[in-house]
Amino acid sequence: MTGLAEIDAAVEAFRPHVDPAAAAVHLLGLAEAVLERWVEARGGVPTAETREGFRLLALHRQGAQDVPSFNACRETCREIAYHYNLLCLEPSAAQDLQRQRMLALLVRHLALFVSGKLETERLGEFCCASRPLRA
Amino acid sequence: MADDTSTMDRKARYRKVAYYPGCALEGTGHAYNTSTKAVGKALGLVLDEVPNWNCCGAMEVKNVDPKVQTYLSSRVMAIAAHDMKAEVVMAPCNGCYHNLKKAEHDLAHDAGSRAVVDGIARKAGHPAYQAGEVETIHVLDWLKHGIGEAGLKSRVKRSLEGLKVANYYGCMYTRPRHIFPEKDQGPGSESTAKPHFMDDLLEAAGATNVEFPLKTACCGGAHTLSDSDISTKLVLNILRAAEAAGADVIATECPTCHSGLEMHQVRAEKVLGEKTGVKILYFTQLLGIALGISPRKLGVHENVSDGVAALEARGIV
Image 1 (spheres, rainbow over the protein chains, first blue to last red):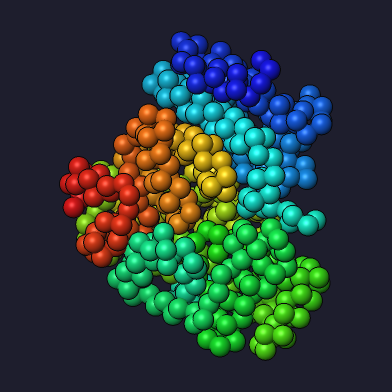
Image 2 (image 1 turned 60 degrees about the vertical axis):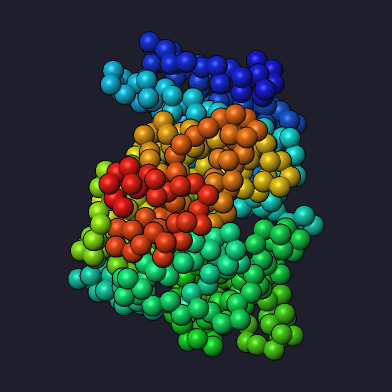
């Protein structure tokens, strides 16, 4: 998995699995890959550490360093972790298909958000917690 | 007892507030302005518009010189505090609300910001705003604490029962967390991670809130002009998530988010061939309908998506 376009295509192609935990692992891996691309694009080495049990959250923290507007995807990352936990720890035959669909939409949102930031890097500075252009 | 007293004090304080509509509510967010005023009137709350208000500095000024943006926002608060003798300023727009809160924070914590604001205010010939002179609130705070769920429920004339709502707060209502010290203070306060004031008010009006995990996600508003395709895809994803959650409508509380959702819903169909049917309404329009106000008086006809159709389908209007 190299580029964000491939990751995005993989998320778009996702269809709910019969095994909800396997789906959760797959989608969490795609979300981590999105943030790895962001960290690498800014010249960093993606962390292998975890935060609250999730590498995804550690990667988000790493990616948001000096980029306050990157926190606009903070809750998306936390919702991904939450849905992962639901699918792996509280499987529910009645709700797992819906949860998988929602997890895929969350990962897609993260991929689109990061794609936008990478496509026009300075646009991120026009977001809510922006830095001034002259700083 | 102390809690009861402070709750009653706040309720009294919020009964009449200085109203700062901001630029968007005179343009694309006109229906938000109309519906906010109509709901306030129906609930017996008073809005006293800040005279001669100016732009809060939005995103444009902030990116060129953030301290000038701090001055612009502080001037609005200065008029409210000094000329109107108001204790509370209410801003329905997330951008205005965010910028006034940011100015308040900067003036309380940054000597450089204070010096710039003092200097410009002196040149402009008015006393500079001092941190703490007024309290800035959002329209959600105003209704949640000024009336509350019980007060709202007792005034409902046309319940929103059966209507499934995805509440979308956008990214500026809760971020960055440090400029909203009153949030995350336990029961009764707003949460920055999972905001719920809009959910609470609409539930009191009879609606069913769906579980919506993208309630604070980015709508791509800042990219709308420079990278429209990303904005369209981000919005489309939000619309899809709302539909997947079972929502009939998305309730909004920010004119920028609202316009973005409506415009990119149309663009997604035209450019990407992706049609979504979920309707988008300001939460004040939904509350107004529950209070028995006609959709026209709430500006529902000004919306792009046909919100009335979703309400008719549920037998509400």
